[in-house]
Length: 130
Image 1: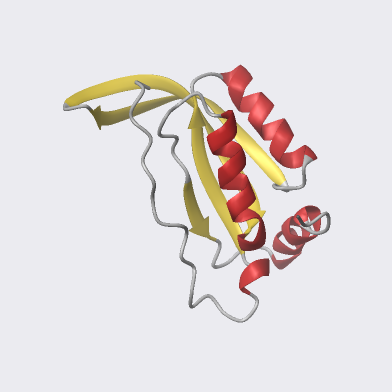
Image 2: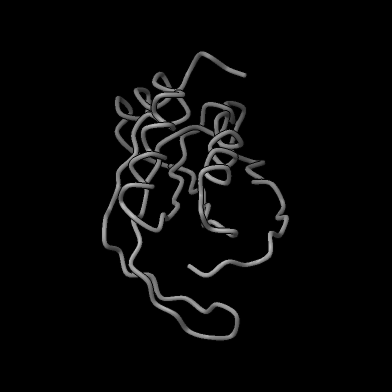
């Protein structure tokens, strides 16, 4: 992806997701320019307990409008499982590690799923809070 000036965006607003907001599970999506960068980021997120699991989907074709032109690139998509409590640190890590000036960072609340799996996600990122 082509470089772009850094912009500041509003922080994630997840108000209204209940009293256990910090333990709500999220899927965070981001892309990396290649599999090696994606593997490094995935390992860091899991090692630092910011993510329970990260799936890397290699050779995703991304089509997007950039600087007035439609472009297409091969990227590696990361699907990151975490919690709202860890989101800010996940986003910070993505921004620090990304070679893109405007990395994709999208958080999707998990509204349903296997209760045992969702509990495992919460337990996997619990502790070692900064």
